[in-house]
Image 1: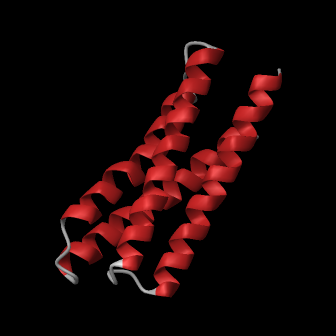
Image 2 (image 1 turned 60 degrees about the horizontal axis):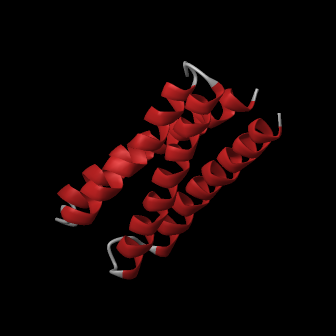
Amino acid sequence: MEEDVIYKLSKKFAIRIVKLYSYLCNEKKEYVMSKQLYRCGTSIGANVAESLFAQSDADYLSKLKISLKEASEAKYWLELLFESDYLSAQEFDSMTNDVNTIIGTTVNIINKKQKQ
């Protein structure tokens, strides 16, 4: 079931975001961009979790679309952190691969649901 997959992916990503936030604050002394990334990166999974108990198909799609927007924002903050030398290429690539997987999976779920 794709809902299980996106739930697990987004939760795993949120855990990575929490750890990255701690690293950026404690080691790099970066607080502003990392906080923005923390908010949207953890919001992805929170909205996916809410979608599992949606009141209607419209509510379900709305929650997934919010998750998609949050994932897009997370990607932006990762790019900004990388381009301002707070993230290494390896860190950036790893996190970006995860968020791209979340985006692709979410888009697939939305598209399938809208065709039903």
